[in-house]
Amino acid sequence: MASTGSSALLSIAKLMPIDRVFDVFKVQGQPTITYVSRQNGYFEAKLSQALNSRGSVCVLTGPSKTGKTSLYSRILAERSIEALRVRCDGSLRASELWKKALEQVNFTRVAELQSDRTREISVGAKLGATLGWKWLAGMLGEVSAEGVASWTEAEARQRVLSDPGPEHLVPLLKQLPLLLVLEDFHYLDPKEQTTVFQQWKTFVDEEVSVLVVGTTHHAADLAHANKDLVGRVFQIDLTTWSDNDLSKIASEGFKYLNLDVAAETSKAIAAESVGLPIITQAVCLSLLLEAGITEARPQITRVDWKRRDAYDALHRVALERFQAFESNYDRLIRGPRKRARKFDTYELILSTFTLDPLVFSLKREEIIERLKKLPLHGDQVPPDGSLNSTFGALGSFQQRLGIEILEWSARDQRLYILEPAFLFYLRWRKPRAQAPSTTDLLGELIVKLGLKNFDFVRKLPRQADS
Image 1: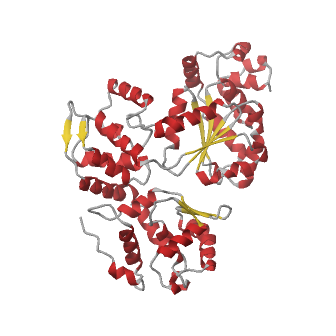
Image 2 (image 1 turned 90 degrees about the vertical axis):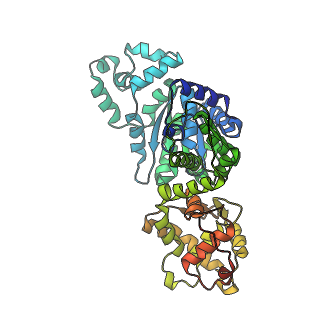
């Protein structure tokens, strides 16, 4: 059952109306009809609490494609707040970050939001000016009110953006419905991270909150970047989705389209979406398009899909949307200097992720335990030295290939899959008549590598063709 907020949005959408299946099951952009409040709105409540705590650094973490952007976009929309989004990368300097945020300010849009919130800006009247770049320049106090009055908006904007710092953002974030959102903070150079968080004290002192979005295992980078932030960081960690919540995405969408679909179909899709809503959305859309359904039906229509139809759609999505993983998969499992390596460490480590239960990170000791479950001869088990070498070289090896799928954290002694969709691709790159078992996946991996010295490969049951 959808949350109250989702139900209200669904009612509004029916008035709009949204008829195209592409707008119901959204693979790009933010979902509306099929937005599901996970765990009965737990994460929405937590993020709202974090934003209500003034002067805090709200850290929203989770694996890739688990709905972090959809979550905060939803909450900000409900609060009539506009996000100033800055996406970080290795080349971004701290000084450029503030400018990128300021460049996104749309004072017309802010005025509309401000009207919605029916909140006054007392300092605006003091300047005798409407919201705009002249207003901001005057707020910064660098020029007298009389001097600012003689500028055009374009001149004021140019002056403000000439050499901005965090103090240029404080008046905006403190008094207007705006929130600074930093995405992928962990990609910043460590020195730049430290500089940013040293400057961030300006925000904390002025009771201005900021939202940082990134992957779970990089949340600790905040504390390492600035010890003064300890106790001021409010972290919300999104796990991968439960099958039950993923099923709601499918069932709510089918219901909106006036389609009577067996609950088993939604459950089958959810169970194989590896905890990612984007895969559930894509598989539902593929099912509809394959059946020639492109719009909502005027009246309730029964659609008799079987589990096999869902499995066919899973395979289509793997090929149509994640085919780029194939070449990465080939290169990654073979590792560097294949002929020079005594042990098949790269492919063996990757194979541990095919074992149940399905996870997106493994500690070193967990990898070793899973390796013990593989049917290896004693001389095929990589020693500690080989594992250490592989973990240490993983980053530079992937960088040379131009891919980013795995990440080894020496600090956490844990291996992370940065793209959970990669595991989905491993499961559904081949057509299947049933959900793949661990034996199926291991067998396919070993056959692909041509590792004939694995005795058990000949004993594996052959996967039936669909």
